[in-house]
Image 1 (cartoon, rainbow, N blue to C red):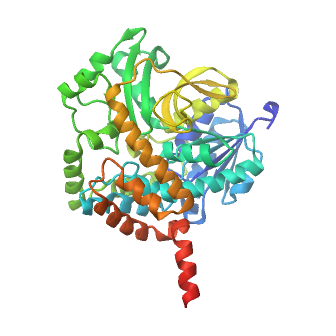
Image 2 (image 1 turned 120 degrees about the vertical axis):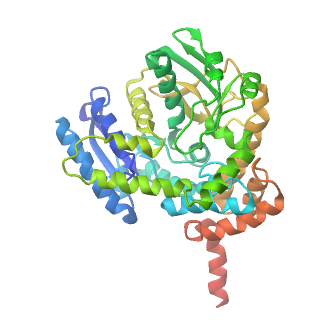
Length: 445
C-alpha cells in the first residue's frame, strides 16, 4: 500500500489475549506507523474471543480518535490481500494441545514444556504446515508484505518459512526486550542507552555483553543469581560459580538444560497438584476475557502482564516502525544465519542483534561467542532442522531422529514410545503424518 494511503496490517490469531497490547502500540506510535486498516483474523472456534478482543480494540481506537478501521474476520485471504505487514500469533490446537505437550513427556521422565523438548517439537509439527499455508496466501495476495512471526517455537517457524517459502519473514520474541527493560529499571537508564549482545537460537541464547551508557555491567548482572526470568518458566536461582565460569547470562529457558533434574522435579510436583502451565494460562485467559468484555474498558488492562509473553507486542510494533521508516536501529531478531555462527548452516535461523533497515534486518557480527555454548547450540539446531523437515513432509523417521537427538531425551526407546503417544494425541492436527494411513485404511475397508 502506498505510504500516503496508510498501512494495512493483518494479525493472524487476532483473538489472542495479547492483541490489546498490540493495539496500544499502534495507537501510541501512529505517527511513525500510520496504520489505517487493521484486520484481526481468527478461525471459527476462536470467534468468541475474536469478537470480545475486537470489540475492545474498536473501543481503544475510538477513544484515541485515530483514523484506524478495525476489521474482524475469519476470511484470512481477505485480510492478507494488499497487506503491508502480516503478524502471526497462532496456537494450533489451542491450550488443550499445549496441556498435552506439557503432560505426556512427564510420563516418560522428560521435561514437558511448550517450546522446549518433545512438547516444542509437537507444537512445531502442528504449526509449521499452517504457517506455510499462510505464506502461500501472502505470496499470492501480498508479495511485498513482511511476515512478522511471534508464533512459537518462533525460531523453528521462522526457519521453516525461510527454507520453504518466498515470503520476507522475521521471527521475534519477548525475551530480549524483557531483558532490556530489566536492565533499564535496574540502572535507571533509557533503553536506547543499553546494549546487550545475544548469541544463539530462540529460547536458547546467551547474553555475552551488557553495556549501560558505555559501561560494562555483565559482572554485576551475573552476580544476580536469580537472573532474568519469565512467568512461564519456574523460578530457580543459578549456581553463582557456574555463572561466573560461563561468563554469559543464560536465557531462562536454558534452565531446562543446565538444571534438568530440578526443573523436572518441579514440573512433576506441579502436575500432581494440577498446576501445569497450560491450566494456569487457561485461568488467566478466562479472567482476561471477562475483563475485556467490560464495555466501559477502553485501554489495555494491567492484568495482561500476568499472561507471560509481556512486551511481545511492543517488540512487534518496534520492528514494524523500523522496517517502515528505515531507522537502522538495533533489535534482537530471529533471522537466517548467513555465517554469523560459523558452525551452523547458512539458512539456519538464529537469534542475534540486527540493524533494521528499510529492506530488512542485517545481523551483526558477534564480539563474544562463548565456546562452551557451541555444542548445545549445534545439537539443538540439528534437532530443529530434522523436526522442521518432519513437519513439512510428515516423515515419521525424521521425527524419530529429531526427538532421539534432542539433548533432553534420554534414549531412543523413550523417544520412539513417547513420539507414538504424542503423534496419536495430536492426530487431528497432523494430516501430513496420518493422511496416508487413513487413506490406506479406507481403501482396505
